[in-house]
Image 1 (cartoon, rainbow, N blue to C red):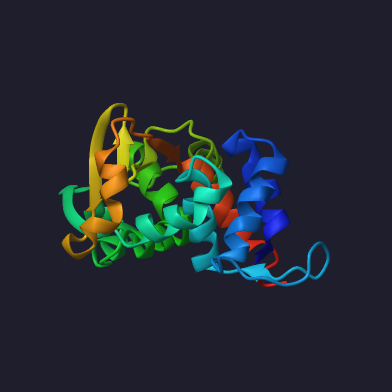
Image 2 (image 1 turned 90 degrees about the vertical axis):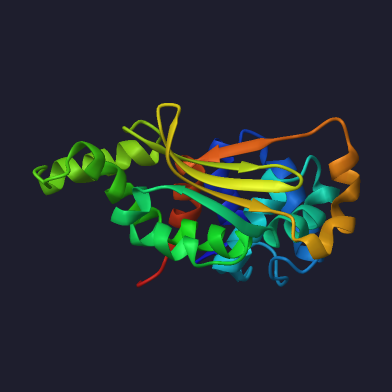
Length: 219
């Protein structure tokens, strides 16, 4: 498990914003109860899978730290709408994602399933498992850095989200999530705004979150 400072340190290179900005996002989310409060620095509480997903949604889904909690609340509760493609047939993690009702639950499965997704992407070019263990490990590392035959693309909109396995510009599999009809009124400001912000991140960010979560596990 990783503390908030450690997780922010690991994901900063993939986010692009400075450490101070990300720390401000983290503080606001902590005050809102989306990540655990406690000591700062040494002795800071570990973040679990749910907290990691909240941190990801709150930092990537919001334009500013003050909007982070609202982004978590809105994006987490988006409902599964449609699934397209057949790449899930060879990837249990994607099948597990398809059983989740909300985007928040799906994102948690996606983060936890990074190793299996990397293996499934390797199988695109090695369907008969002919690569040596060393070569497969090398390819998994390349894919986790966005340099493979396919990638994972997660897109966050104010009222919509999607998870896709992309090969070039072609989706091999995609899951889409929309606003629950019962909560339309809560999203009306975002739906009526003419300026729409869209955030996209890839397997690189997901792999960084997985690495942070696994830090120290089993020691």
